[in-house]
Length: 357
Picture: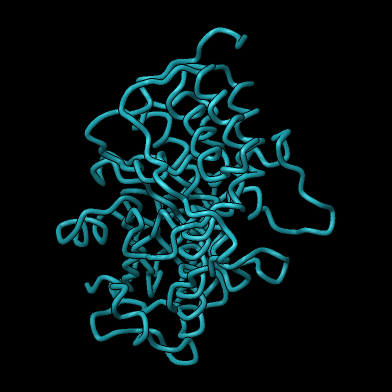
């Protein structure tokens, strides 16, 4: 398997052709790096200390910097309220309000080489070939065609691009998209529905995990419009397991692929479905692996219940809620701490304190 390297972006194949390398991996389109306006203030030193800070003093510093027009300094101080002070959820809500106003005034990182890398293994099953449940004579046979593979490559690239943009250029998904040639002959059946559960994906996953460490594994298996009867889809569009013991703690996303995926025609963005599922894992990582209080990260299912975000009636994508979840709930410090096996829990230095004065 050949990892996607930044230096090779210029040589990536066009989606007009089958995006397969000789190594059996999908080749993704180049990373889209948003341009940074020269009018934005330089980010400066936004990194947090290891110890907790005083809430009142940090809030005062943020307010004074903002009044003085020092937007980068103010943004950093408001972020410190969230990730290094003992305060209430209401205090963090107030800090996010200021972050929402200030972040567009501060330069993002535009150098992918300086981003925090999150390693992703995408397993694209070229063929699904299973028999129906016991007593059934139905054979489910589905094969990914070149158009499917090209679409998945574009979808994975869209996910990577959204994460890079929404994280101010601080998180880069390094995606190895492996086309699994061996037919998938085992799926997990529940209530007449089939899914590629952990044990079904384990043989292909273990083969790749022996070569490289990953933070997320995502699988794609075709369910519809093959040369056989369409598979009954699971009860969900896609699903995520925050951590999988058999994968060494790596998160796992399952995509039951159909030719109606992704839902770009309905107004969604490329990579939006994958971004939603990945944020379930990140919510788990921030709370349990990094030790931050509940509410610091945002559950991607909470779009309709988040008082800080309202989706306009004319908008048919939740991607901008996910942007809120990444760029306002997660500070730049937290984004660069993301790990499934962190050496320490940086969020453990803060606790939810008493009501603010």
